[in-house]
Image (tube, rainbow, N blue to C red; front, top):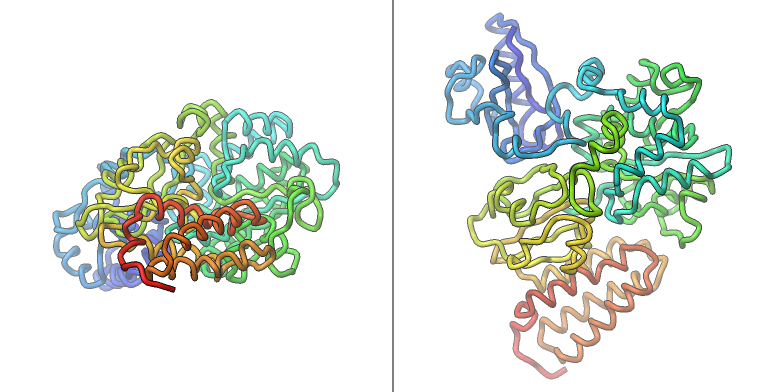
Length: 515
């Protein structure tokens, strides 16, 4: 039998993966070829999508990017046996881009059908849950603490401390909530994992639930991710039927179930308390803290809130032990980070590496430089609220503390590349305009400050009382940073100030004029 893999990831489907799979299947039927067509998750090499792989005795050979019009030529070149063709990229596991990664959270991505539970078990799935049940709550929390796992949603808070807080809460009702409202520009790892390896996320949630004493879990997914929503719901049904989700988790007598909740298009619901408000049926607006969600979260109950990448790291930590995870990374940044390369970059996609590689290595070696072929001028790390770093700062180590030292932040691991044609004054304006559009409106510094920010930047660029308006912009950024309730307003000044500091000339292109 011939086995062919064509990704079902929505990025691959957006560039014709379904049509390619259909054309291959049609040919097999017409020629009476015994073919197994597997719709796997994406490997994360998005510039090669659709990446079609064929199983050979020596390993899986890839071809990409494949269009539906390429299929006849591939068949004529005997690609079913790994035949030579201009689209042939060789053995996929040997591609330097993939072979040099340290895939832990994304270890199973692209290997099999994401909803194939038998393959999930065969690759170590549920080992972490089994061990968590054997250890019990205190020891399982100790493993998470010892691993050094920190929140991958942006704050970098030690995950184990959250677990300990919820475990020690005395309430009979507790919740586990995963925030999959992935709204940052240039980020897509949450979506890819939910579509490509949903059981890993579910296993992490079940481990969390039985460990801290919760009986209900919720995955809050943005409405713009219909494929992820459908895949997660199907995976939940499969897990229930298999007995590791529901009233009696793996025969332990412990109950834990999961449901999917769909967001309503609000960026600010990526903030944990706004998300909890949305889950309670209210408008998604930020809550003042304290109390923290670990003590008074969903419906006032202790709630463990993590993002997708944090929770998906948990099964591996429990399965392999804290030391295995702790051995990766640098200083206080332990384990791996899933970086998402986007923007003007030749090789966009997913790169999972232990903390400590440099931004230059990520952009130039993995990303292949700019897609346009022009020099890199700026790289934004950490989503739309992250700093714009100049090319001269690209030797910074990609870990939490090192990025803070150069005025940046890691955020969700999104990395957006710009070449030397970018207008950084326009990018600074975009940051303020984005905040104005997405603010929940609860606090004045964010709601009003962002609108005034756009106006002030427009005056600066136009050359109207430039020095006075530059000073006014600095004061405004101080107010937003110190006075906003959440990161929406509090971090918006970060990209603005970085653009001002590193790309001053872009704000001085017009001559001074009188107001």
